[in-house]
Image (cartoon, rainbow, N blue to C red; front, side, top):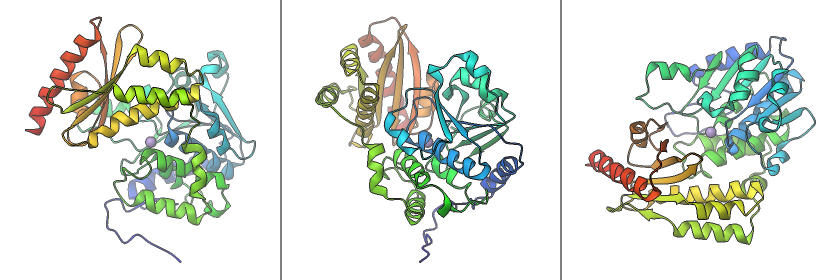
Length: 382
Ligand SMILES: [Mn+2]
């Protein structure tokens, strides 16, 4: 039985091949290079601190390229990569390298015919050593991404984000993994012949970037998931990737963090500072996978407060060495990219961030910034 979406939502594409004209042209350009017979060595990378979309898109791309060319594929990661994602590997043709663990000299020795960057809007989201050695020197480079560029960025900034030879960016696509999925038929591949792990890779990308379908803006993630299920995906099996291991200490720390949420005087901003107490407790958890997952859980808790009545912006604050503070904002109602821009930051209307340097005590910094934000929010929502 063939089910086609009957909803006339704006995106009229998705699935195993693109039906959006711009995507079709870019994807066929990329496929011509892949099919040229000149591609023997392939490198794929995602963004720093990879999420499941970045990871899923890397593996999905690796499967497609291996199936097409028969060549091995090297995936590069820029931070520690939780071991459970290695379960996405099937066969011995995927070589995973953590750029932090190898010397720059070793990276210099590697030459690739094709380097593909997925889910990475800007080169500052790529490890600089990797960019300067492998990516920049590859014979052909592709960017495959779905991050919306804010309207206010300048033409020069816009051009800088086209860092590859061919740049495919589709902001209507819920996940980069689904954009990768659209290469299947143009490459002359049949979905049914792909390894089953391909389905899982795309699916964890969808789950991650839509928050388990919670933030779907169209029918696409549902429709693409339906196609994956039809192709042999067993959705409930993805729990092994999505549900990290936990410990009692980790749970206690999440509880402690939740108690540290503060509000601006008018209640329109909820913020959480990952203060030295929380940070030390985090480091005591030792296992890097658990540390990262606890941090993700704390962040998604503060982010979720944007749905609470009266709260217009949520802020997650982290301190880095040399008194550098990172402010990470979320909102449904206020364009936080403009707020970030005030502090030379960047992002999208719903999610944006900026860095702030100050030797003042944290209480003073937060008071100034929160007051400023509150004024801005009042003006915007007046
Ligand atoms: Mn993504």
